[in-house]
Length: 488
Image 1 (cartoon, rainbow, N blue to C red):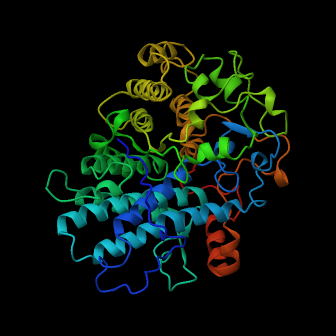
Image 2: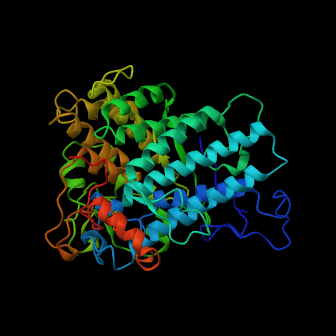
Image 3: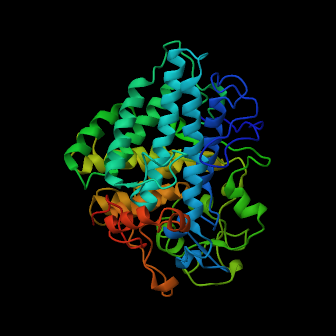
């Protein structure tokens, strides 16, 4: 379920990590004169949705890092020049200011509002925290150790960094508390129409929180298998059960609330992004993947010829398949977390010997089928059940006969499915080590494929002592340093 963006979002929604109150606001009664807390949730959801969807070269380049796309003209980002456009700064600010800043202020306002009844307040605060957990884990997965408990204190200009593993442990505890606090069918109120993801449906938020718990638990499996297994079994009964339950946010057809993909691919007039031969020629074409004509357009726009460009070097845009028509739809939803991702996580859990109620092969088939169904239904093409069955029947795709161990089988198919969840695709590639991607021959300062972003310039300028300590703790503030969960 998803809700379209509200057009009349107040103009004062946060542009920094701490909200400013309006003139003549009675600070003892935040329900009078200040921004209602629920509207800051709206702004945070919108900001997080844009961060998860955007392919803007000034920050959100994970579609390039996992080699779905490459650039034909200005190829700095495809060759890992993160410094030229201060990419780490822009991503850091998007999460800390746009998402977490709004959520922190929403929490303050909702908590202080004497008008809201206790049940409604509990539901609202739990939803706020689930979103915060999502934003925090993306920050950790991007940078490693980050400012956490002190980060949103406006009076602390030099917050200390905390261990990424410690942050993850706390995030999982927070999700447990959120799941316990959310009360469906209790008669209590919710975020209502201010919630652009589920319209305030508490049962849906419980499934979302449980699915996030599953994601975080499996992400840390190689760090602590026993704890991960316990958390997975706790979460599994309450995760998404269908595509319709996925956490997504629908954009609108007019500015300023269009999908940033539409802005990047259509409005910008930029003719630069094309599919790679790694993805199209080496993966989608050999298996006649039914998602190919949805993910990409034919080379000449009319025939059925698809071709991916070499990854990295500049080339001629017109020679290659560019992103599909469905990605140019201004209303295409931003996917926070999908049902097919959940099924892949459960398949991996089963393959690792965790009892989640079904076999790895069945869950793998469910995941692939759900992905094909989602994309064909979104594009309004194909026959999902028939197309998915034919695809899975191929020896190179079928779980029993596909190449490699479970990491290769699941990692490869998950990479294909997470095409519109590029940040999570980057995490899964780093964690599962499949597919085996290679950097282009020429990269910025001979860089390998980034495993993290280096800390932003703003931290070097304003919080250098703590940044330096954090860099030492993780093994160096360079793109080759692994996040704590990346063990292989």
